[in-house]
Length: 469
Ligand SMILES: [Zn+2]
Image (tube, protein in one colour):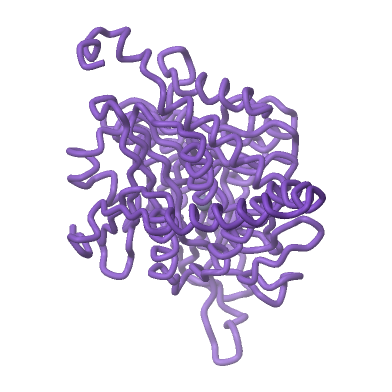
C-alpha cells in the first residue's frame, strides 16, 4: 500500500466554504437592498437554483469518462477531492495499485470509539457504444427532466448523493456521533480486486476505520418502492469440454465430442428453464434461483475459408456464466455439474474460470442479517419512511458488487441506490436518471446518514461501550 502524498492525508480546507459564505453575503446584501418584488423573485429562485447547482455538480462528475478499459481515474479523484474540500471533510488518496487512486473521506464523529459508517461507491463505469445512444454518454445532457449518461444509475449518482446529503446535514448544523467514511473505489466493473478488495484487506480498514456498517449500491426500481439488498449471487464461470474420436462428416457413431457436448447443453438448458420457471411463476425472486447462461461455444476444425465441413471434431467446449445465491447448496450444484453436465461417462471434463465462495471466512452463507440482530436495516427502513420513501422487501442482488468484500469479513453491508419509478438501465444504452429522482435520493441519504450517524443504542445494550458514551 502506498499513500500518494502524506500532506494529503486527511487534510481539510475551509477556503471554499469562506468563498461560499462571501457569495451568500453578497447575495443577501443585494436582495435586502432591492425592491420587495425582487426579493420575492430571488427567494423563489433560491431553492431551484440550489437544485440547479446540485444537478450541475452531478453532470460534472458524469462528464468525466471513467469507462473501461481506460478510465480517467485521476480526474474523478480530483473532482471528489475538490467536493470534499468544499465540505471540509478530511481526505486521503490511497494508491493500492499505481494509476488506480481510491479516495477515502472522513467526517469525524463526536464519539470516535463507536463503530463507523462506510458509504462506498465506485468511480468506474462500463463502456458505452456511443452510436447506439440517443445522447452522447459522457455529455450528461438533460432531456425532458432526464439526465442521460453512463454512470447516471451505476453508480455515480450514489457517490455524489452521499456528498450532497452531507452538504445538507452540515448546513443544518448536524454533527455525527459516529464517524462517517466515504470510499470512492476504482475497478468495481472489472471485479474490484484493485479497489474495494484491497481496501477491505488494508491496514487502514482493519486497524483504523473500525467500520460497523457498509452501504453500497443497489438497483433502480420501476415501481414506487426502493429496492434493498442483503446479499448477492456468486459467480461461477464454468467451462465444460467433450473429447472423442474424430470422424468423417458422413459417419454416424457414438461418443462424438460435439454430440456429447450437445447432450450436456440440453441438460443445462432444462435446468435453466426449471429455475427461470420459478421466477416467472413468482415462486422465487430472481436473486434466489441459480441462473445459468451459455456464453460461448467452441468447436470445429478451422480452414482458410471457415471450418472443415466433412470432419467431426475431436474436441468441443462450452462456457457458462452461473450465478449461485448464498441460500443455495453449492455442494449439490457441484455434484450436478460432475454427474450430469460434464460426466466422465461421456468423456467430459470441466473447470471453473472463477468460483466465488458462497460462504464467508466463518463458513456461513455470505448474507447480511435481516432480522432484529441487525439494527441497520430497520434504521434504514425508518429513515427512508421519514423522508417519504418506501422500501421493498430485502432481496439478494442478482449480480456481484463490491459489498461482498465487506460481507466476507463478517460485516453487515446493505445495497441501496435510491431510484424508484425508474427503469433498470445499468450497463444499457441510454442509461438515465431523472433529476427529480436524483434530488429525492439526496433527501433519503440525508435521513439515512443522520439516523446511522446518531445511532448509539446498540452499544448501550451490550454494556461494553456504555462507559465510553
Ligand atoms: Zn455498479
